[in-house]
Image (cartoon, rainbow, N blue to C red; front, side, top):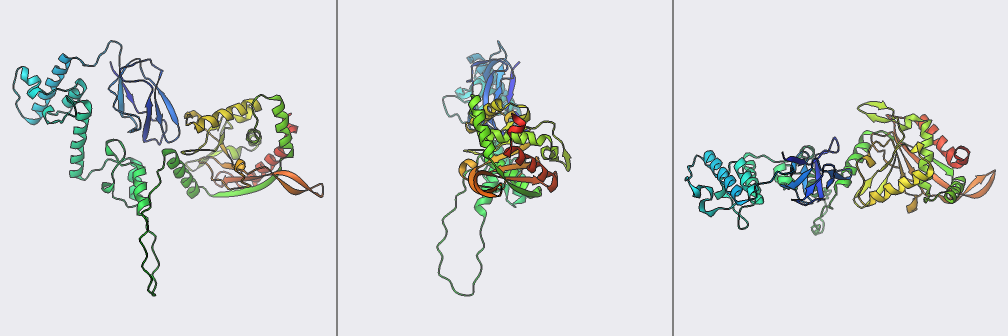
Length: 456
């Protein structure tokens, strides 16, 4: 029996997925568990495995299509099972379609051989089958080629549905799009949807909102010179990853009461540790690797900073999983180094390099971006001295790292030039208070200024 291939749900809040490409072509044999297609969700690009062995058939989604979760986009025919692709099957199914149509419309079609192909109507097996299932009269469907194809029937169905929806004032839209439209007082019937079956998506609503923003000009009693009309502002296209980033960080900023702690640390011994580690390890060691390791060790003694806020309560995380904020072309992603406190420095560096590389190639899996308990954002490589980061919900805190730069500081009562780094800890006050956050930052600073005492 044929096995349905559906657009999977890879996250609780996922409404749609974008098909990036098929890894098998229609008609090709596939094995259960073999990579079948690549899809993009709001978090990652993921390879989806074939749910059964057989032959790929009846593919209805093409690369670039955004498909609702749960929608059937292909079939896998069991070994020995064949679609009705021969002429006899074509005629039989076409006859069934015509019979169904006559029943639905109350019309009587002539019996005999001409009833199978009235007026020499030809239809592919799949097209005829779909028409039969929907009670369509094949004579009313316009063919784009020498015979009616599946796409012709689907286009006819879509046109019928659009006409009915228009007459009844109905609009196909995702739940998020409806919510945004309600919040911004936007009429969904005025929006041209870009989703499957012309469904209105959240991005469509946001584009309309962006275009409708008007800045009120203050009135003046004095006459003013005519002002030339401004050029039309064009909304910049937003990818799914950027949109999700914007939504999540907006939610965090609006709901999480942030507070910030700032502290400088002397990085001279951190640099010495890096040189020492690099001399004995094959992997390239970065300051980020050292700081991930030290943050993970500091979190062991300060579990409140490794906790999370969920549904009005604080929950402790059993593992220490450090997320790294990585800027990619489509936005900001946060791959996670799981159980970072248990990894050796060489393994940690190799894992970090692999995650960052795959993030920039848009090849992260859902697991790569899941179960983070604490986040580090490092802008030091861009020459930034310090900055405040927004907490990555539902985590308790995020550490912002600036560059390591030479500064004049007091050393043993005398001015000295030392490599210094600025640490800025952003916290969700619902999860952690100032005193506990300060104790964690103090411990982390101590590890940075003297890492060899605990690691070597």
